Image 1 (cartoon, rainbow, N blue to C red):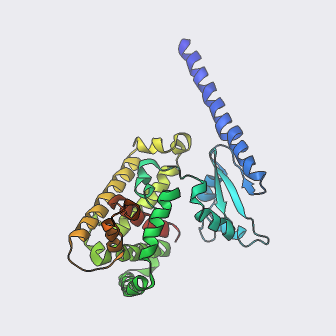
Image 2: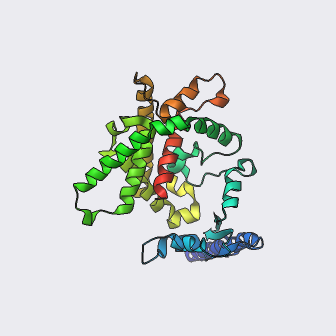
Image 3: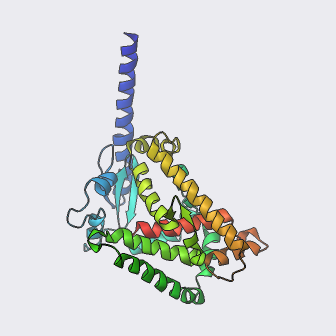
Length: 313
C-alpha cells in the first residue's frame, strides 16, 4: 500500500514536471520571441525542432532542411524562425544582416556547453568560445588565411579531389551515396590543408581521420536526438549508460589523441610544409599569451572546421 502511494506520487510529480517544463515553460519562452515579431513553431514535449529535423524530412529529396530553404525564398523573407527543442527555443537566423550581427557580436552573449564531453573538442574552438577569447582566436587564425597561403594550397585541393574521384571510378556508381562522398572530399581537403599530406599516414580504428570524423557526426546526432538528452541534457550522454554513448565518447577521445599526435609529429618534423598547422604552431613562439594558440585550441579548431564543413554538405 505504501509502495503504491509512493509510486502514484512519483508519477504525479513526473507528469507535473513534464507539463510545467515542456509545455508551460517552453511556451512562455517561445512567446518571448513571438512578441518580437519572429516566426515561431511550437510542438509540446519533443519540440518542433526535432519533429521537423528528424521525423519529417522532405520525401522527394530526403532533405530535412527543405522547409528552411523554402522559407528563404518567401517575399518578404522571415528574419528568423524559432522552434523549440523540448523546453529550449532554437533560433534559426534567415536574414543575412542578423547573421552578420550575431557573428560579430560575441560580447553580447555567452556560448553554453550543450554537448558535454562529446563536444569538448570543439568547446575550445571558434564555435565554442565568445568575447575576448573568440577575438583572440579569430585574429590568429585569420592571419593565416592570406592570399599566398590560399594560392599555395590550390594544388593540394585539386590533387585531393582528383584522388577521391579516381577512387570513385573504381566502384559501382549505382551504389555510391553522393552526399557522404562530398563530405569526405570536403573533410579530406580541410585535413590536408591543415596537416599537409601527413594526414593520410594516420588511422583511427582502421579508418582515415576524415572517415572517423564523418562517423562521429552521425553518432553525435544519435546522442542528441534522444529522449534522455531531452530530459537531462549533456549529463545524460556523459554518463555513458548505453553502448552508443560510450562508443561516441571513445571516438572523441581517439580523435583528440590522434590530432595531438599529428601536431607533435608536425612540430618535430624538419619538413618546411607551411600548412595551417604550421602557422598556428608558430603563434606559440609569440611572447604574449594573447597571441598564442595552445595545442588544445589548435585541435579544437581543426575539429570545428572539419565537422562544421561536413555537417553542412
